[in-house]
Image 1 (cartoon, rainbow, N blue to C red):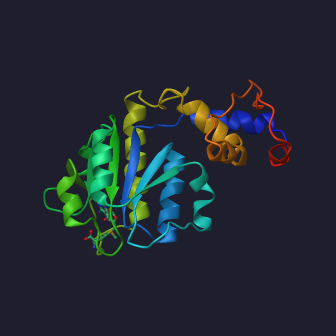
Image 2 (cartoon, rainbow, N blue to C red):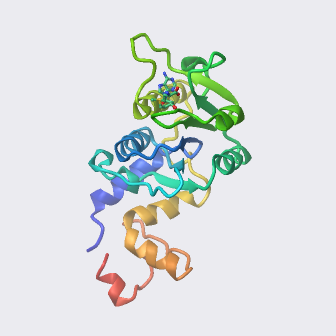
Length: 229
Ligand code: SAM
């Protein structure tokens, strides 16, 4: 089935506003409802990807809370927190670790207008001491009730929307695709528009074909694949 023009326009409008320089690192946030709620907020704010370090042997799973947002925000898995932290730092992100330590600043005092990664921890035990020691800045959301902490997905949403607010105020929210790396827009557009065809091209180790202005694939596809479009 050809892609409907309205659907194609919608995909482009969402990609136009995506921000590759705002991300999350989740340490052992493996509960499906938390992971799902976090990816849903990440999609709502305009993230391209998020990073997960799972407990040994765990596979990320999602439930209906995600509303399919796992299709629109790429979840990259890392074997260890050290690996994830090193990768994010090498990519130029400033890491903001969320915990309730005495040296943590009020989250509203952080500057999230540059490349930013929020690092969040497990529901039961929070960030590991090793990861907490590796972040650039500890932040906390001030609490005024009897309970000491928020649910991790609520903390993630609070921080992401603060980053969005700051960027909007600073005029740093992309509106026409400038929040993505060169070439990334076309790649994501193809994957979003034709996920099964994209997967076939990856299996064949072939580059994605171009899309026409109407969102059609510019190359002739094998018949079996055409039927899946
Ligand atoms: N007992 C854990 C602790 O001491 O860190 C509580 C973990 S909390 C339920 C799960 C995660 O949510 C935390 O690791 C942190 O990432 C985030 N979080 C919850 N409340 C927060 C707050 N007030 N400020 C910043 N992050 C918070």
